[in-house]
Image (tube, rainbow, N blue to C red):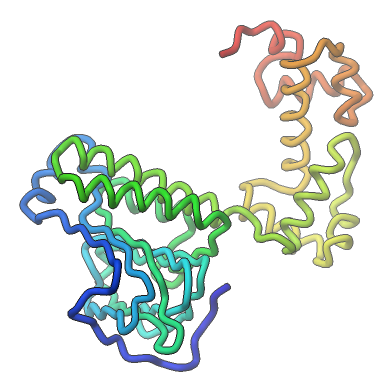
Length: 300
């Protein structure tokens, strides 16, 4: 999906635009005003655009930028360089360059296969936490995307909104869209790519909710060591393999309690816990109430 590029390319900026491009820049006096208001001081889109087949596109900022820059490469390829380290960017990849780092960065389209990018610049007090949640840092600016169309639809909507006007209400609306964009990037960072050991292991667990799992066996099935598998799960879910399997079991139990007339004992059996008392203890530990009490709660 992406990796280091061994062939440096010059960061040549292009003065003219690109055929069918879209570009919106919020006037800086409006940016300053918006950063003083309750909602937009937390999240504010300052610039956004769409550059199709962006031949000659490139930027070089010796001290970085005050805004965080988000680019989605949907076709073609390019490159990004941060503090002298260059990485190749291919389609279905996001580039996120954190703002206010003081580090030099540059990026540009491939000469032979220039990228198509959707992009925006954002500022605000919430931005650092959101990009940290996505696992982004100056030395890790790339995110492989799972659902590119979903993210480009957000940017399309965002650009269309700003093309209409940059009123305070419109800036609030686009702040919400940017929030959705950044949280979606965080989800894509944490979601395993298809065919990887983590994805295979998660699918294995989903298909065996009614069974018991041994970590060494699962690790052997997906071709990694037990310690490697545990590390992958901790990074992706915040917990271990067995904790994730238990969470899947409890999710199935909640659904059965909510949508069927199965007894508590039968629900436990459906998720591989034939001992009703053990099932009730595990359920109560996670939910703070027994299965029967959970079922009786009014929901919705």
